[in-house]
Length: 366
Ligand SMILES: Nc1ncnc2c1ncn2[C@@H]1O[C@H](COP(=O)(O)OP(=O)(O)OP(=O)(O)O)[C@@H](O)[C@H]1O
Ligand SMILES: [Mg+2]
Image (cartoon, rainbow, N blue to C red):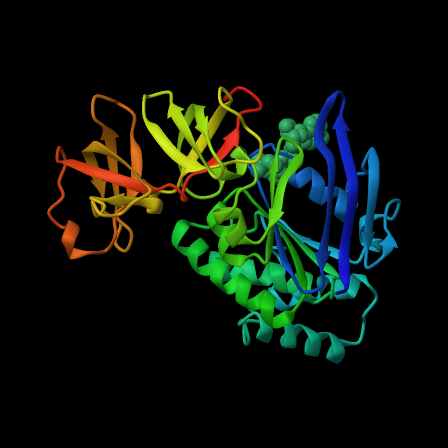
């Protein structure tokens, strides 16, 4: 497989603050690769070093096998799409898209307009050539910004939260469009976001970033189903979590006593022994409501329903264990059988011993 971008142990410091800390990854040709992490974790700083706006203090960056460190941005085969699209409001759509080509020295009018029109067609804006930027919707402006970058045929297109300025409905629409566009043109995308739903929908691979470091690089489904760190378990998707202590352990199972007094049986983790502090995570959809009493290997307990969050296709229950104020999220199956549930009801819930994910606690919880 051809590799378009290689980043090796790249570090960037601002005075004594390390914004990017020994990050390494490859992006294969044609992949949609996202970097997902909370505000301030170092995403833009990393992107700016790849684009050439900043230099790393240590590490290597190669694009299609060529070392690009030391090259100015316009000599690197990458282009960047910003959150605030930075379109030229005084130019029409075609002039915006032609801008980079002209700057590269393309003067032939008919060649220019053919390339621009072909690109506009690709992003679904055929016939928009002479429209002014101010006459376009947010989503259309988005596509012009992408067309303006893609027409330069970068090895990698770098996108820094490009949907950030759009309203929710349009973002939902654009993330599907953007993924479609990327698979059609086949250009390698490196996409930055703090929004996990964007990353999960669009990406072939996602790197989850936290405080300058990568916690896990994986497919969306592995990140969701097999998080490798507590941070990933907390950041990707909803999770219920408990702090607890291992009480017993046998060949494949262990018993965890949680801080709020449950004793749960869970799959054994690598090495932890009795007495060790652990953090236990459980997805809302892993919780069964009124599990069949005949089912074995289920952790069961009683809860009171606090509220029902109806959200069309995916309703959720907020429940509290008896005599406890903590709330758990339970995803409510679309099933007539549960129509009768209402706030203040008492229910038994349960979860399969295999569904919990435990991590040894290596540092105190924030
Ligand atoms: N030029 C700079 N000088 C000093 N500190 C900086 C500079 N640029 C970024 N930082 C710091 O580095 C950290 C990472 O910033 P960065 O912009 O990369 O975050 P981000 O992950 O893109 O966040 P957001 O999602 O909010 O855009 C932040 O703490 C920021 O304050
Ligand atoms: Mg940023």
